Length: 524
Image (tube, rainbow, N blue to C red):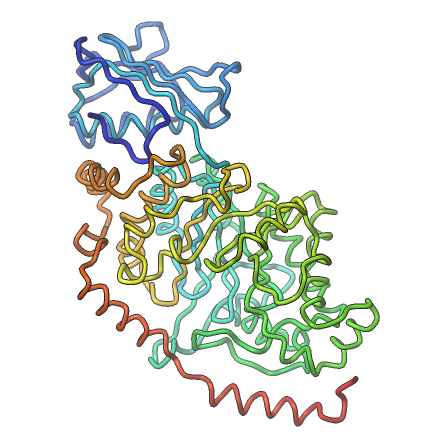
Protein backbone atom coordinates (compact mmCIF):
# COMPACT_ATOMS: atom_id res chain seq x y z
CA UNK A 1 0.00 0.00 0.00
CA UNK A 2 1.20 3.49 -0.90
CA UNK A 3 -0.62 6.28 0.95
CA UNK A 4 -0.73 9.61 -0.87
CA UNK A 5 -2.64 12.80 -0.03
CA UNK A 6 -4.33 13.93 -2.18
CA UNK A 7 -5.21 10.49 -3.54
CA UNK A 8 -4.08 10.04 -7.18
CA UNK A 9 -6.53 9.15 -9.93
CA UNK A 10 -4.94 5.74 -10.56
CA UNK A 11 -2.21 3.81 -8.78
CA UNK A 12 -1.18 0.23 -9.60
CA UNK A 13 1.49 -1.62 -7.62
CA UNK A 14 3.36 -4.69 -8.89
CA UNK A 15 4.75 -6.56 -5.90
CA UNK A 16 6.13 -9.36 -8.06
CA UNK A 17 9.04 -7.23 -9.21
CA UNK A 18 11.83 -5.91 -7.04
CA UNK A 19 11.33 -2.17 -7.55
CA UNK A 20 13.82 0.64 -7.05
CA UNK A 21 15.85 1.68 -4.00
CA UNK A 22 17.26 5.15 -3.45
CA UNK A 23 21.03 4.72 -3.03
CA UNK A 24 24.37 6.44 -3.49
CA UNK A 25 24.19 5.84 -7.25
CA UNK A 26 20.81 7.54 -7.69
CA UNK A 27 20.84 10.35 -10.22
CA UNK A 28 18.06 12.71 -11.26
CA UNK A 29 17.42 14.69 -14.43
CA UNK A 30 18.47 18.32 -14.47
CA UNK A 31 15.33 20.31 -13.69
CA UNK A 32 14.65 23.28 -11.44
CA UNK A 33 12.38 21.26 -9.13
CA UNK A 34 14.97 18.45 -8.85
CA UNK A 35 16.78 20.45 -6.14
CA UNK A 36 13.65 20.36 -4.00
CA UNK A 37 13.46 16.57 -4.17
CA UNK A 38 17.20 16.23 -3.55
CA UNK A 39 16.98 18.31 -0.36
CA UNK A 40 13.93 16.39 0.83
CA UNK A 41 15.71 13.04 0.41
CA UNK A 42 18.84 14.36 2.08
CA UNK A 43 16.88 15.66 5.08
CA UNK A 44 14.62 12.64 5.51
CA UNK A 45 16.49 9.60 4.19
CA UNK A 46 20.01 10.98 4.76
CA UNK A 47 20.96 10.01 1.21
CA UNK A 48 22.40 12.04 -1.63
CA UNK A 49 20.98 12.18 -5.14
CA UNK A 50 23.08 13.75 -7.87
CA UNK A 51 21.78 15.92 -10.70
CA UNK A 52 22.75 14.45 -14.04
CA UNK A 53 21.98 15.12 -17.68
CA UNK A 54 24.11 12.56 -19.57
CA UNK A 55 21.64 9.72 -19.99
CA UNK A 56 22.70 7.79 -16.87
CA UNK A 57 19.99 9.23 -14.59
CA UNK A 58 17.72 6.82 -12.69
CA UNK A 59 15.03 9.39 -11.79
CA UNK A 60 13.92 10.92 -15.05
CA UNK A 61 11.83 14.08 -15.22
CA UNK A 62 10.55 14.79 -18.72
CA UNK A 63 7.85 16.80 -20.45
CA UNK A 64 5.70 15.67 -23.36
CA UNK A 65 3.54 18.27 -25.12
CA UNK A 66 1.09 15.55 -26.21
CA UNK A 67 0.23 14.73 -22.59
CA UNK A 68 -3.49 15.31 -22.08
CA UNK A 69 -3.71 17.13 -18.72
CA UNK A 70 -2.13 20.53 -18.08
CA UNK A 71 -1.52 19.86 -14.37
CA UNK A 72 -1.33 16.08 -14.59
CA UNK A 73 1.56 13.62 -14.61
CA UNK A 74 2.47 9.95 -14.69
CA UNK A 75 5.08 8.16 -12.59
CA UNK A 76 6.36 4.73 -13.65
CA UNK A 77 8.73 2.93 -11.28
CA UNK A 78 10.59 -0.15 -12.51
CA UNK A 79 13.51 -2.06 -11.02
CA UNK A 80 16.07 0.43 -12.29
CA UNK A 81 14.29 3.77 -13.00
CA UNK A 82 11.59 6.16 -11.89
CA UNK A 83 10.19 8.02 -14.89
CA UNK A 84 8.03 11.12 -14.44
CA UNK A 85 6.18 12.43 -17.50
CA UNK A 86 4.06 15.57 -17.69
CA UNK A 87 2.84 18.08 -20.23
CA UNK A 88 4.75 20.91 -18.58
CA UNK A 89 6.69 21.99 -15.51
CA UNK A 90 3.48 22.24 -13.46
CA UNK A 91 2.89 18.50 -13.77
CA UNK A 92 6.55 17.80 -12.95
CA UNK A 93 6.23 19.94 -9.83
CA UNK A 94 3.15 18.03 -8.63
CA UNK A 95 4.77 14.67 -9.39
CA UNK A 96 7.68 15.64 -7.15
CA UNK A 97 5.25 16.39 -4.31
CA UNK A 98 3.90 12.86 -4.74
CA UNK A 99 7.40 11.34 -4.85
CA UNK A 100 8.24 13.02 -1.55
CA UNK A 101 5.44 11.11 0.16
CA UNK A 102 6.37 7.81 -1.47
CA UNK A 103 10.08 8.09 -0.62
CA UNK A 104 9.35 9.09 2.98
CA UNK A 105 6.69 6.47 3.59
CA UNK A 106 8.71 3.56 2.16
CA UNK A 107 12.11 4.75 3.42
CA UNK A 108 13.42 4.93 -0.13
CA UNK A 109 12.66 1.28 -0.97
CA UNK A 110 10.12 1.63 -3.77
CA UNK A 111 8.03 -1.17 -5.33
CA UNK A 112 7.26 -1.20 -9.03
CA UNK A 113 4.21 0.97 -9.58
CA UNK A 114 2.41 3.20 -12.05
CA UNK A 115 0.56 6.39 -11.17
CA UNK A 116 -1.68 8.46 -13.43
CA UNK A 117 -2.84 11.67 -11.84
CA UNK A 118 -4.56 14.97 -12.62
CA UNK A 119 -6.78 17.36 -10.64
CA UNK A 120 -10.53 17.17 -10.22
CA UNK A 121 -10.97 20.97 -10.15
CA UNK A 122 -9.03 23.72 -11.90
CA UNK A 123 -9.21 26.16 -8.96
CA UNK A 124 -7.73 24.94 -5.67
CA UNK A 125 -7.33 27.89 -3.35
CA UNK A 126 -6.19 28.85 0.13
CA UNK A 127 -7.34 32.18 1.55
CA UNK A 128 -5.07 33.92 4.03
CA UNK A 129 -6.55 36.87 5.92
CA UNK A 130 -3.78 39.30 6.85
CA UNK A 131 -6.19 42.17 7.54
CA UNK A 132 -7.12 41.06 11.03
CA UNK A 133 -3.64 39.85 11.98
CA UNK A 134 -0.43 40.60 10.12
CA UNK A 135 1.83 37.71 9.11
CA UNK A 136 5.46 38.28 8.15
CA UNK A 137 6.95 37.60 4.72
CA UNK A 138 8.80 34.56 6.09
CA UNK A 139 5.59 33.20 7.61
CA UNK A 140 3.73 33.58 4.33
CA UNK A 141 6.52 31.79 2.47
CA UNK A 142 6.19 28.94 4.99
CA UNK A 143 2.44 28.82 4.32
CA UNK A 144 3.07 28.77 0.56
CA UNK A 145 5.31 25.71 1.04
CA UNK A 146 2.45 23.93 2.80
CA UNK A 147 -0.20 24.66 0.22
CA UNK A 148 2.14 23.74 -2.66
CA UNK A 149 2.84 20.41 -0.96
CA UNK A 150 -0.93 19.75 -1.08
CA UNK A 151 -1.18 20.69 -4.80
CA UNK A 152 -3.13 23.92 -4.24
CA UNK A 153 -2.64 26.41 -7.06
CA UNK A 154 -4.11 29.69 -5.72
CA UNK A 155 -3.22 31.94 -2.80
CA UNK A 156 -6.19 34.22 -2.18
CA UNK A 157 -4.60 37.01 -0.15
CA UNK A 158 -7.03 39.11 1.92
CA UNK A 159 -5.15 42.41 2.30
CA UNK A 160 -7.67 45.10 3.27
CA UNK A 161 -9.98 45.19 6.28
CA UNK A 162 -11.77 47.38 8.80
CA UNK A 163 -9.05 46.47 11.30
CA UNK A 164 -6.02 47.03 9.07
CA UNK A 165 -4.83 47.95 5.57
CA UNK A 166 -1.85 45.77 4.70
CA UNK A 167 -0.55 46.72 1.25
CA UNK A 168 1.51 49.75 0.24
CA UNK A 169 -0.32 51.95 -2.27
CA UNK A 170 2.04 54.71 -3.35
CA UNK A 171 -0.71 57.09 -4.46
CA UNK A 172 -2.37 56.91 -1.02
CA UNK A 173 0.45 56.74 1.57
CA UNK A 174 -1.85 57.19 4.57
CA UNK A 175 -3.31 53.73 3.94
CA UNK A 176 -0.19 52.20 5.45
CA UNK A 177 1.09 55.13 7.51
CA UNK A 178 -2.16 55.21 9.48
CA UNK A 179 -4.48 52.51 8.16
CA UNK A 180 -2.13 49.60 8.91
CA UNK A 181 -2.22 50.25 12.69
CA UNK A 182 -4.90 49.83 15.32
CA UNK A 183 -4.64 50.95 18.92
CA UNK A 184 -5.77 47.62 20.38
CA UNK A 185 -7.75 44.49 19.56
CA UNK A 186 -11.17 43.99 21.16
CA UNK A 187 -10.71 44.41 24.91
CA UNK A 188 -6.93 44.27 25.27
CA UNK A 189 -4.50 47.19 25.33
CA UNK A 190 -1.90 45.96 22.84
CA UNK A 191 -1.41 47.85 19.56
CA UNK A 192 -1.20 45.82 16.37
CA UNK A 193 0.07 46.75 12.93
CA UNK A 194 2.11 45.86 9.90
CA UNK A 195 2.01 46.07 6.12
CA UNK A 196 3.72 44.75 3.01
CA UNK A 197 5.84 47.03 0.90
CA UNK A 198 5.52 46.65 -2.83
CA UNK A 199 8.91 44.92 -2.80
CA UNK A 200 7.55 42.44 -0.23
CA UNK A 201 4.61 41.76 -2.52
CA UNK A 202 6.90 41.10 -5.49
CA UNK A 203 9.00 38.69 -3.43
CA UNK A 204 5.98 36.68 -2.29
CA UNK A 205 4.40 36.62 -5.75
CA UNK A 206 7.67 35.38 -7.28
CA UNK A 207 7.93 32.64 -4.63
CA UNK A 208 4.35 31.56 -5.28
CA UNK A 209 4.93 31.41 -9.03
CA UNK A 210 8.01 29.25 -8.52
CA UNK A 211 5.69 26.87 -6.63
CA UNK A 212 3.01 26.95 -9.34
CA UNK A 213 0.64 29.10 -7.30
CA UNK A 214 -1.27 32.09 -8.65
CA UNK A 215 -1.80 35.01 -6.27
CA UNK A 216 -5.21 36.69 -6.13
CA UNK A 217 -5.24 39.80 -3.92
CA UNK A 218 -8.49 40.81 -2.25
CA UNK A 219 -9.35 44.50 -2.13
CA UNK A 220 -12.73 44.28 -0.40
CA UNK A 221 -15.31 46.88 -1.51
CA UNK A 222 -17.62 48.57 -0.62
CA UNK A 223 -17.71 47.10 2.91
CA UNK A 224 -14.85 46.30 5.28
CA UNK A 225 -13.24 49.71 4.66
CA UNK A 226 -13.10 51.46 8.01
CA UNK A 227 -9.27 51.46 7.83
CA UNK A 228 -9.28 53.29 4.49
CA UNK A 229 -12.01 55.69 5.63
CA UNK A 230 -9.96 56.47 8.76
CA UNK A 231 -7.23 57.68 6.39
CA UNK A 232 -9.44 59.44 3.84
CA UNK A 233 -12.83 60.37 5.38
CA UNK A 234 -14.25 61.60 2.05
CA UNK A 235 -14.56 57.95 1.01
CA UNK A 236 -17.50 57.49 3.36
CA UNK A 237 -21.01 58.82 3.33
CA UNK A 238 -20.99 62.09 5.33
CA UNK A 239 -17.16 62.31 5.42
CA UNK A 240 -16.98 60.59 8.78
CA UNK A 241 -13.89 60.92 10.98
CA UNK A 242 -13.21 57.37 12.16
CA UNK A 243 -10.35 55.40 13.65
CA UNK A 244 -9.08 52.06 12.36
CA UNK A 245 -11.50 49.49 13.78
CA UNK A 246 -10.41 47.79 16.99
CA UNK A 247 -13.23 45.24 17.37
CA UNK A 248 -14.33 42.39 15.15
CA UNK A 249 -17.77 42.38 13.57
CA UNK A 250 -19.42 43.96 10.54
CA UNK A 251 -19.22 47.76 10.47
CA UNK A 252 -21.90 50.18 9.27
CA UNK A 253 -19.58 52.71 7.63
CA UNK A 254 -18.69 51.58 4.11
CA UNK A 255 -17.51 53.28 0.92
CA UNK A 256 -19.99 55.80 -0.46
CA UNK A 257 -21.39 54.52 -3.75
CA UNK A 258 -22.63 57.93 -4.87
CA UNK A 259 -19.37 59.87 -5.11
CA UNK A 260 -17.09 59.89 -8.12
CA UNK A 261 -14.18 60.36 -5.71
CA UNK A 262 -14.90 56.88 -4.33
CA UNK A 263 -14.61 55.29 -7.76
CA UNK A 264 -11.41 57.22 -8.44
CA UNK A 265 -9.91 55.86 -5.22
CA UNK A 266 -10.95 52.30 -6.07
CA UNK A 267 -9.58 52.54 -9.60
CA UNK A 268 -6.30 54.07 -8.42
CA UNK A 269 -5.78 51.23 -5.94
CA UNK A 270 -6.64 48.65 -8.59
CA UNK A 271 -4.10 50.18 -10.96
CA UNK A 272 -1.32 49.50 -8.48
CA UNK A 273 -2.62 46.02 -7.65
CA UNK A 274 -2.68 45.09 -11.33
CA UNK A 275 1.00 45.98 -11.63
CA UNK A 276 1.91 43.95 -8.54
CA UNK A 277 -0.17 40.84 -9.25
CA UNK A 278 0.46 39.67 -12.83
CA UNK A 279 -2.03 36.78 -12.68
CA UNK A 280 -4.68 39.39 -13.59
CA UNK A 281 -7.40 38.18 -11.20
CA UNK A 282 -8.57 40.47 -8.38
CA UNK A 283 -11.03 39.55 -5.63
CA UNK A 284 -13.20 42.60 -5.03
CA UNK A 285 -15.05 41.45 -1.92
CA UNK A 286 -18.67 42.58 -1.99
CA UNK A 287 -19.63 40.86 1.27
CA UNK A 288 -21.30 42.16 4.42
CA UNK A 289 -21.97 45.64 3.09
CA UNK A 290 -24.56 47.02 5.50
CA UNK A 291 -26.42 49.80 3.72
CA UNK A 292 -27.80 51.85 6.61
CA UNK A 293 -25.66 54.82 5.56
CA UNK A 294 -26.62 54.49 1.89
CA UNK A 295 -30.32 54.65 2.78
CA UNK A 296 -29.92 58.16 4.19
CA UNK A 297 -27.01 59.40 2.09
CA UNK A 298 -28.07 62.05 -0.47
CA UNK A 299 -25.26 61.04 -2.83
CA UNK A 300 -26.21 57.36 -2.77
CA UNK A 301 -29.90 58.11 -3.18
CA UNK A 302 -29.08 60.37 -6.12
CA UNK A 303 -27.07 57.54 -7.72
CA UNK A 304 -30.01 55.16 -7.31
CA UNK A 305 -32.34 57.61 -9.03
CA UNK A 306 -29.98 58.60 -11.84
CA UNK A 307 -29.19 55.00 -12.75
CA UNK A 308 -32.81 53.80 -12.58
CA UNK A 309 -32.10 51.42 -9.70
CA UNK A 310 -34.79 50.21 -7.35
CA UNK A 311 -32.95 49.93 -4.03
CA UNK A 312 -29.64 49.93 -2.21
CA UNK A 313 -28.99 46.27 -3.05
CA UNK A 314 -29.14 47.14 -6.73
CA UNK A 315 -26.82 50.05 -6.04
CA UNK A 316 -24.28 47.59 -4.66
CA UNK A 317 -24.58 45.40 -7.75
CA UNK A 318 -24.17 48.52 -9.89
CA UNK A 319 -21.07 49.40 -7.85
CA UNK A 320 -19.55 45.92 -8.19
CA UNK A 321 -20.27 45.82 -11.92
CA UNK A 322 -18.53 49.17 -12.44
CA UNK A 323 -15.46 47.89 -10.62
CA UNK A 324 -15.55 44.71 -12.69
CA UNK A 325 -15.86 46.69 -15.91
CA UNK A 326 -12.82 48.74 -14.96
CA UNK A 327 -10.81 45.59 -14.35
CA UNK A 328 -11.95 44.14 -17.68
CA UNK A 329 -10.74 47.30 -19.42
CA UNK A 330 -7.31 46.55 -17.92
CA UNK A 331 -7.31 42.94 -19.08
CA UNK A 332 -8.24 41.49 -15.68
CA UNK A 333 -11.08 39.42 -14.28
CA UNK A 334 -12.75 39.60 -10.87
CA UNK A 335 -14.18 37.42 -8.15
CA UNK A 336 -16.54 38.42 -5.34
CA UNK A 337 -18.26 36.79 -2.38
CA UNK A 338 -21.47 35.37 -3.77
CA UNK A 339 -25.03 34.97 -2.48
CA UNK A 340 -24.61 37.91 -0.12
CA UNK A 341 -27.21 40.33 -1.49
CA UNK A 342 -30.93 40.32 -0.90
CA UNK A 343 -31.90 41.52 -4.35
CA UNK A 344 -32.00 39.86 -7.73
CA UNK A 345 -28.61 39.59 -9.40
CA UNK A 346 -29.91 40.32 -12.91
CA UNK A 347 -28.03 43.63 -12.84
CA UNK A 348 -24.74 42.12 -11.69
CA UNK A 349 -22.12 41.40 -14.35
CA UNK A 350 -22.20 37.68 -15.09
CA UNK A 351 -18.46 37.50 -15.66
CA UNK A 352 -17.77 38.18 -11.97
CA UNK A 353 -16.99 34.76 -10.48
CA UNK A 354 -18.44 33.91 -7.06
CA UNK A 355 -16.94 32.34 -3.98
CA UNK A 356 -20.03 30.66 -2.52
CA UNK A 357 -19.59 30.57 1.24
CA UNK A 358 -23.07 30.26 2.72
CA UNK A 359 -24.05 26.60 3.19
CA UNK A 360 -27.74 27.50 2.85
CA UNK A 361 -27.28 28.87 -0.67
CA UNK A 362 -30.06 27.02 -2.47
CA UNK A 363 -29.62 24.76 -5.45
CA UNK A 364 -32.10 26.99 -7.26
CA UNK A 365 -29.98 30.11 -6.78
CA UNK A 366 -26.80 28.24 -7.74
CA UNK A 367 -28.40 26.90 -10.92
CA UNK A 368 -29.69 30.38 -11.73
CA UNK A 369 -26.17 31.80 -11.61
CA UNK A 370 -24.78 28.88 -13.60
CA UNK A 371 -27.38 29.51 -16.30
CA UNK A 372 -26.11 33.08 -16.47
CA UNK A 373 -22.63 31.74 -17.13
CA UNK A 374 -21.16 32.63 -13.74
CA UNK A 375 -18.16 30.66 -12.45
CA UNK A 376 -18.60 29.35 -8.90
CA UNK A 377 -16.04 28.39 -6.27
CA UNK A 378 -17.11 26.21 -3.34
CA UNK A 379 -15.96 27.74 -0.07
CA UNK A 380 -18.90 26.72 2.12
CA UNK A 381 -18.14 27.73 5.66
CA UNK A 382 -19.65 24.47 6.94
CA UNK A 383 -16.61 22.62 5.58
CA UNK A 384 -13.94 25.01 4.33
CA UNK A 385 -13.59 27.76 6.97
CA UNK A 386 -10.42 26.80 8.79
CA UNK A 387 -10.74 29.41 11.55
CA UNK A 388 -13.63 27.49 13.08
CA UNK A 389 -12.60 25.17 15.94
CA UNK A 390 -12.78 21.43 15.38
CA UNK A 391 -15.81 21.40 17.63
CA UNK A 392 -17.63 23.39 14.93
CA UNK A 393 -16.04 21.86 11.84
CA UNK A 394 -14.49 18.47 12.46
CA UNK A 395 -12.19 16.62 10.11
CA UNK A 396 -15.09 14.30 9.32
CA UNK A 397 -17.30 17.20 8.22
CA UNK A 398 -14.58 18.30 5.80
CA UNK A 399 -14.17 14.80 4.38
CA UNK A 400 -17.93 14.37 4.04
CA UNK A 401 -18.34 17.49 1.88
CA UNK A 402 -18.64 16.33 -1.71
CA UNK A 403 -16.74 19.33 -3.05
CA UNK A 404 -19.10 20.05 -5.94
CA UNK A 405 -21.86 22.64 -5.65
CA UNK A 406 -24.25 20.59 -7.78
CA UNK A 407 -24.51 16.98 -8.91
CA UNK A 408 -21.89 17.47 -11.60
CA UNK A 409 -18.27 18.54 -11.14
CA UNK A 410 -18.46 20.61 -14.32
CA UNK A 411 -20.58 23.22 -12.54
CA UNK A 412 -17.88 24.00 -9.95
CA UNK A 413 -14.76 25.96 -10.85
CA UNK A 414 -13.03 24.78 -7.70
CA UNK A 415 -12.67 24.74 -3.92
CA UNK A 416 -11.13 27.24 -1.52
CA UNK A 417 -10.06 26.78 2.09
CA UNK A 418 -10.42 30.00 4.09
CA UNK A 419 -8.18 30.99 6.96
CA UNK A 420 -9.84 34.03 8.53
CA UNK A 421 -7.78 35.30 11.42
CA UNK A 422 -9.99 37.13 13.91
CA UNK A 423 -9.06 34.43 16.43
CA UNK A 424 -5.83 33.26 14.82
CA UNK A 425 -3.16 35.75 15.97
CA UNK A 426 -0.07 33.70 15.09
CA UNK A 427 1.20 31.02 12.73
CA UNK A 428 1.26 28.34 15.43
CA UNK A 429 -2.51 28.63 15.85
CA UNK A 430 -2.92 28.87 12.07
CA UNK A 431 -1.11 25.57 11.57
CA UNK A 432 -3.11 23.83 14.30
CA UNK A 433 -6.40 24.80 12.68
CA UNK A 434 -5.21 24.19 9.12
CA UNK A 435 -3.83 20.67 9.58
CA UNK A 436 -5.03 17.97 9.10
CA UNK A 437 -8.09 19.65 7.56
CA UNK A 438 -6.09 21.00 4.61
CA UNK A 439 -5.16 17.43 3.69
CA UNK A 440 -8.83 16.50 3.52
CA UNK A 441 -9.68 19.64 1.54
CA UNK A 442 -6.87 18.86 -0.91
CA UNK A 443 -8.50 15.49 -1.57
CA UNK A 444 -11.88 17.13 -2.20
CA UNK A 445 -10.20 19.52 -4.62
CA UNK A 446 -7.83 17.14 -6.41
CA UNK A 447 -8.90 13.51 -6.08
CA UNK A 448 -11.68 11.91 -8.17
CA UNK A 449 -15.21 12.38 -6.87
CA UNK A 450 -16.09 9.69 -4.34
CA UNK A 451 -12.56 8.69 -3.33
CA UNK A 452 -12.10 11.30 -0.60
CA UNK A 453 -13.94 9.55 2.24
CA UNK A 454 -13.40 10.01 5.95
CA UNK A 455 -12.34 6.38 6.44
CA UNK A 456 -9.84 6.55 3.58
CA UNK A 457 -8.31 9.65 5.13
CA UNK A 458 -8.08 8.04 8.58
CA UNK A 459 -6.39 5.00 7.02
CA UNK A 460 -3.70 7.31 5.61
CA UNK A 461 -3.39 9.56 8.65
CA UNK A 462 -0.21 8.04 10.10
CA UNK A 463 1.65 8.49 6.81
CA UNK A 464 0.25 12.01 6.46
CA UNK A 465 1.32 13.05 9.96
CA UNK A 466 4.79 11.67 9.24
CA UNK A 467 4.97 14.05 6.28
CA UNK A 468 3.80 17.00 8.38
CA UNK A 469 6.46 16.18 10.96
CA UNK A 470 9.15 16.67 8.31
CA UNK A 471 8.02 20.30 8.02
CA UNK A 472 7.65 20.75 11.81
CA UNK A 473 3.98 21.63 11.40
CA UNK A 474 1.97 22.25 14.56
CA UNK A 475 -0.99 20.06 13.53
CA UNK A 476 -3.98 18.89 15.54
CA UNK A 477 -3.83 15.20 16.52
CA UNK A 478 -6.74 13.06 15.35
CA UNK A 479 -8.28 13.07 18.82
CA UNK A 480 -8.76 16.84 18.58
CA UNK A 481 -9.50 16.96 14.86
CA UNK A 482 -12.26 14.37 15.39
CA UNK A 483 -13.55 15.54 18.77
CA UNK A 484 -15.70 13.59 21.17
CA UNK A 485 -19.16 14.92 22.01
CA UNK A 486 -17.88 16.52 25.21
CA UNK A 487 -14.88 18.18 23.57
CA UNK A 488 -17.02 19.24 20.62
CA UNK A 489 -19.55 20.91 22.89
CA UNK A 490 -16.90 22.55 25.08
CA UNK A 491 -14.98 24.02 22.14
CA UNK A 492 -18.21 25.32 20.60
CA UNK A 493 -19.15 27.10 23.83
CA UNK A 494 -15.66 28.58 24.07
CA UNK A 495 -15.76 29.83 20.48
CA UNK A 496 -19.23 31.34 20.85
CA UNK A 497 -18.00 33.21 23.91
CA UNK A 498 -15.00 34.50 21.97
CA UNK A 499 -17.01 35.81 19.02
CA UNK A 500 -19.48 37.65 21.24
CA UNK A 501 -17.99 41.15 21.18
CA UNK A 502 -20.87 43.43 22.02
CA UNK A 503 -20.97 46.63 20.00
CA UNK A 504 -24.72 46.87 19.81
CA UNK A 505 -25.01 49.90 22.11
CA UNK A 506 -22.24 51.75 20.28
CA UNK A 507 -23.80 50.95 16.88
CA UNK A 508 -27.26 52.08 18.06
CA UNK A 509 -26.06 55.49 19.26
CA UNK A 510 -23.72 55.94 16.29
CA UNK A 511 -26.60 55.31 13.88
CA UNK A 512 -28.77 57.80 15.75
CA UNK A 513 -25.96 60.35 15.54
CA UNK A 514 -25.76 59.98 11.74
CA UNK A 515 -29.53 60.14 11.41
CA UNK A 516 -29.65 63.40 13.34
CA UNK A 517 -26.90 64.82 11.14
CA UNK A 518 -28.85 64.05 8.00
CA UNK A 519 -32.52 64.34 8.95
CA UNK A 520 -32.93 67.44 6.82
CA UNK A 521 -31.13 66.01 3.79
CA UNK A 522 -32.78 62.62 3.32
CA UNK A 523 -34.35 62.41 -0.12
CA UNK A 524 -37.43 60.46 -1.06
